[in-house]
Each structure stands twice: as structure tokens, then as C-alpha cells.
Amino acid sequence: MASTIAVPSPAVFQKPTAEAELVLRRNEELERELRESQRREERLAEELRRVRERLRAAEEAEERLCFELGELEAESLCQARDYHRRFADLAEQLARVQVGPAVIVER
Image 1 (tube, one colour):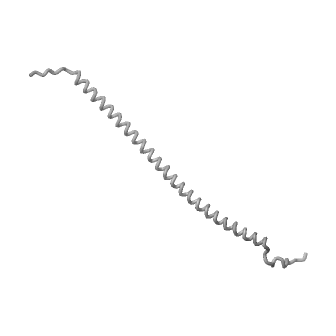
Image 2 (cartoon, rainbow, N blue to C red; image 1 turned 60 degrees about the vertical axis):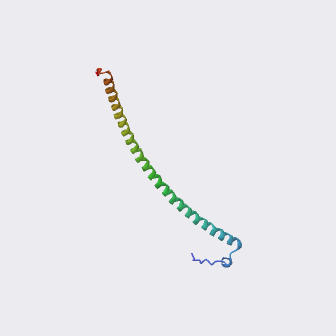
Image 3 (cartoon, rainbow, N blue to C red; image 1 turned 90 degrees about the horizontal axis):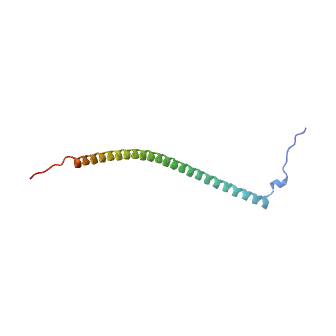
């Protein structure tokens, strides 16, 4: 088999046609839009990363607040029980004083 060499036709070296120029311009426009789209995508990805970080921080803060709230509720319950117990003791003391022996004061 004999080897062949491809020789381009003279049409290849001719000035681009109007249609080819339109295709080239459209291609450049699409490449520019692609670059802009990639930049937008990068910005949105960075914004999403920041939002996720803020969300994580907010979730951690919520957990800490819930824990502290639980501790405060437990403490307030203990204080309420102590107050109720003290109130009952004072009421009992008052009842004993009122029912106790009558003291007659002579002048």
C-alpha cells in the first residue's frame, strides 16, 4: 500500500466566510459566558460554605443554650422545692403558736 499525503485545498486558506465569522464570534461569546458562569458558581460555592459554617455555629450555640436552660430549670425546681418546704415549715410554726397555750398577761 502506498502512503499518501493530504494536501489541503486552496479553500482552507481562504478568508473566513461571514458564516464562519459568526460561528467564531458566537463561540467566543459562549466561552465568555462560560467563564462568567464558572466565576458565579465559585462565588456561590464560597457563599454556601460560609452559610454552612454559620449554621454549624448556630447549631452549636443552640445546643449550649439548651444545656444551660436545662441546668437553670433544674436549679429553679430545687429552689421552688426549698421555698415550698420553708413556707410549709413557717406555716406549721405559725399554727403551733396560734394554737399553743394562752398566755395571760397581768397588770
